[in-house]
View 1: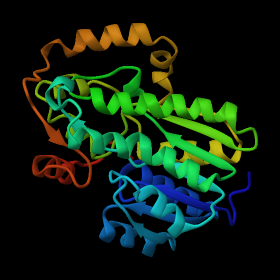
View 2 (view 1 turned 120 degrees about the horizontal axis):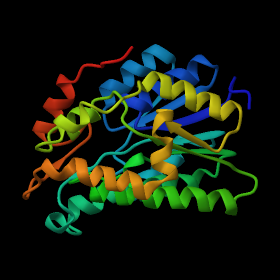
View 3 (view 1 turned 180 degrees about the horizontal axis):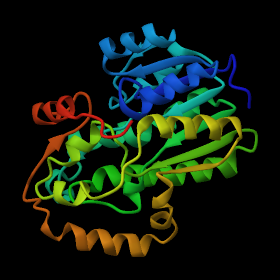
Length: 270
């Protein structure tokens, strides 16, 4: 696929992976529409790459359909928006915050796929659904659901090319939030991380070459291929992690502690 002139919608584009993808696709000639909750950050990005801005909260039911109507037809949909509710699954249960997180991470991507039906769909899931971490159960479950829906859509939509992007640790502000979980930093600081910019290049190349899957960094592919072993390793590493009844919302509109952590994060890789 030649990206020049292609119409692309990237959700969750205000920071991290989404922002890097929007920049990379624009540099390759795509006409990019960017969506997220942070209007100011989207406008800064639009000034840089000439994108159209769409402020939306995809954790609200119906917001995805409204976004699709606002953006109009696209050639490529990049479902990247995502955030979590860091909490024990039996503490939050199915409360409003837990349901909003699932809306953001699963129902909204599916709603955009349904409303737009573009020739190409790129769904960003997470290695978390293969190797879950304490307090990430709801997030991992939503990403697992999106992964299954992605694979199913690949079989059901013969005229649509579907790509799943499965990031492991990526050097973005999300890393600061995960480290708020007591005891996590000592483990996570030892894990290799890739940069959002390198992942964006991999995604753009996957689109151009019409691949079906991107695992990043590549060294985490064995965890995807052999999930039982990966989960055993993570259970061992998580023994010192304290959960209690810790609850906090993540993402650009998360709780104050989460936002402060995001603001303090500095990229470790070029």
